[in-house]
Length: 175
Ligand code: IMP
Ligand code: MG
Image (cartoon, rainbow, N blue to C red; front, side):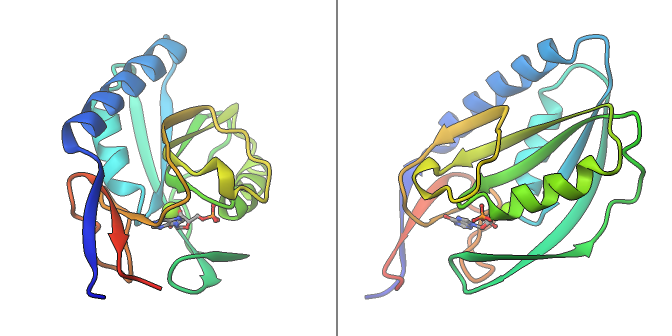
């Protein structure tokens, strides 16, 4: 069967939810500066949209991790491919992810980042697949809980494709 994409969350629903999340984060961080950490590449579309909806001072940094695994699942071994440019010490850090699946990537990452002594650290994800969790991670802000399906768009890829889709879709026709 050829690959095809079915819309799971339309563009306007994603935009509306990100706006709500931005409002919530702005309230929660009132009087503070929030230091957003984008986990590349998947988190970049979400982080840009979210940052525009936050009305407290924002700073940004980026990191890239790679999990050794096949195209659709991580195996728990994570490597930092690109580290942050700035120190986290004393900062109110908000880690921005595209999706939390097994939770392996994030639990590893949060462990590393905690050691860098941020003043506070929270986690924000556009999508959450709670059924797939094998590692317990405390997620502070969730855009949408989704069923156990492989999704693409809004930063999420399948074999590096589809990141630019402006909605969340399910890929049909893959193994
Ligand atoms: P985890 O370590 O299993 O939580 O997986 C985290 C990473 O796997 C995410 O940051 C994504 O890069 C990737 N991933 C998990 N589920 C999906 C999906 O449905 N579509 C695209 N990428 C996914
Ligand atoms: Mg990711």
